[in-house]
Amino acid sequence: MTPKKILSAFLIVTSFAISGKTAAQDIEVRPVKINTINNSELAPVIEDSVLYFISNRRTNLLVTYLNQDDELLFRVFKAPLKADSTIGHATLFAPPDQPRYNAGSLTFSSNGNKMIATHNKSNRNTTRKNRDRNNPLALYSAEKKGNGWYDYQRLHTDLPPGSSFAQPSLSPDGNYLFFVSDMESDDGSTNIFISEKRGDGWGIPIKLGSHINTSGKELFPFIHRSGKLYFTSNGHEGPGGYNIYYIDWQNKNASPVLMPSPINTIANDFSCYISDDEKWGYFASDRNGDDDIFRFSMPQMTCNNPQEVVEDNYCFTFFENGPFKSDTLPYIYRWDFGDGTQAKGLEADHCFPGPGNYHINLSVVDTLLNEELFSVASYDLKLEKTPQIWFEIPDTIQTNQPINLNAEPHEMGNLTSDPVFWWNFGDGETRIGRNIDYQYKQTGNYRIICSTTLADGSTVCFFRNITVIDSQED
Image (cartoon, rainbow, N blue to C red; front, top):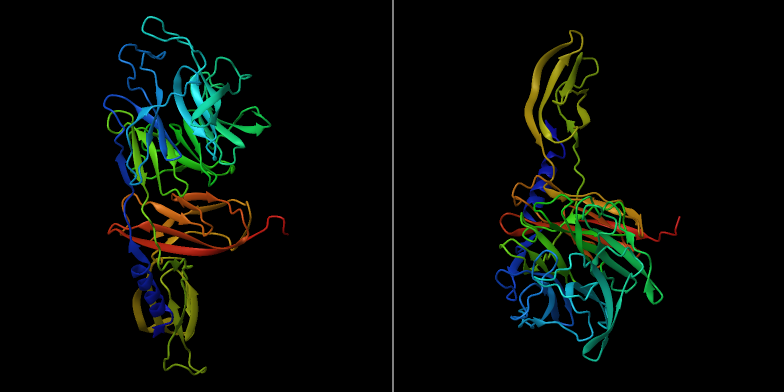
């Protein structure tokens, strides 16, 4: 008795278990040298090879300015980025035309000629003897002229006067401004808002949906040229108090994706800047006791021989060449497949319900007495899922139609304890995370590759093909 397909199926499983691997590295995270002891450094952003950040380090030994929480006032600093990715000496960023008090992060236009910055609305001194406890934050725009910044103008002056507006992020095309505000909060929580460019001004801010904003605090939006919105939150699921996420902000059905460890930890991790190619960036964390800035670099996932995701088939043809072939004999073959089903005949097609251990028995039965005469063969059959990263996609999808991708490791026992899944969409875009929402902008045929690093440091890669058609087509 020979069950067809079992031998060939085993060989396929074995080949997938040993192919498609390449060397990989872990995500590298390290503190930068501009951090100071017992002070805070955060909100990194890069413009023209200069790292800008905010810090409450002392800038004047004779005068001490405090915020309403009796803390040293935050100022903006800048430090040059060297060719070897190291950072030069940090100096105070203090254009002469800016409002008196820096208090928050910056954002720059893609051509570097416009800046939107966070400052206190009031220019009154805040010292130990004279503390203004109601000095909310506002956003100011400035223009670059020569080597300086001038023409500071306050944004959103028609909005609630007692609310703060801070932590701006300007979209690469300059048409959208993301920022944080407490204007719809009674308990001090903050949400992310967006304003659209309207001529020389900005439209009324719109609060982003509940797929981004929560009952907790959302902070430090950073809109990437890929269309992903990176942000900080303590209201979404994550290991720490504050964690860094990203999301396709235009897709209301999307879910935030947690940035992987060691970017996110059980500490507070927040305020990120991501490079255009998303291979490196900066963020802040209090994992070492103070708020410090860290640089991260992503490992390069190179899939030389990605394997195609296969549909597991548990259907087989069983047959037996036996002596009882005469139609006049009252004997038949009866198959018992160990899953509660039986079949009669020399040959039987059968589909098992899924992976599992099945006991197969073939016997000869006397149909007149309805008794089993003897067993021809009896053996155990073990069916397993193909070792692969399983994910499902439609064969065809329209442009701008969201698809959800969920990485499911099948029979891959040598995964790391907290695997990170990398996605390459074949159109120059990449993503990180187990569950990903994505939209294609252009028609074409694409290969979606999902990869992960195994415990031995190697990488496995699996792909599916998808065709994207114009959304206007029927």
